[in-house]
Length: 215
Image (cartoon, rainbow, N blue to C red; front, top):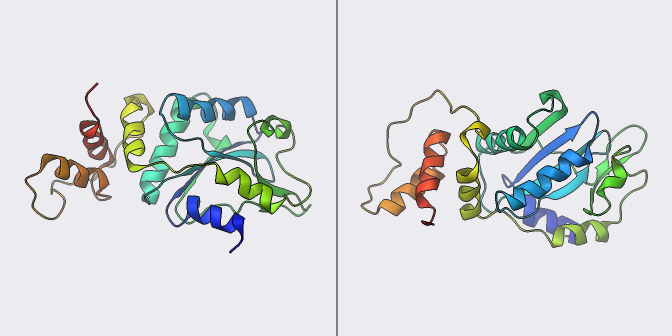
């Protein structure tokens, strides 16, 4: 396995990648605001920055523990509402689960490439969010090597910091049953609720809030 493949597997293995894309046109100022905001406001590790090879910037988030596609998309929607509230939804693409773009890769018939890019160089691609030659694989691996995944604790903490206006409406399905298996430990029960993909998102968020240390 190449260094690049190894780094992509470490960060973005099955169920552990979330991609938020802004294009038509690409706007580095808005993408930079979100890139900085998730670190400053939500205390998350920096996501990778990529150019799509066509018309957009992408932010690649890595989660240490796999999340469902529905939860991943809900999280990205909350970020969109928080950081790009005035951007037309048609300009934003959120991807989770298995339907992820390949980076780096040839992206169009003209031979332009998608690629991960360094924060300092990202503004250069605002008008042309692509590379016209294949990126260096070792350079791509180096960019990913310095990144970290979002831990379950940081994931829960980020949800707790998102205000209600940032959150998508919870699913209409009501789940009344507690997670399987009896427990008398309140913390264990809350952890089960938080990690139960069948529980309503709003309930899981409340469980995450309850698990946060008192300040």
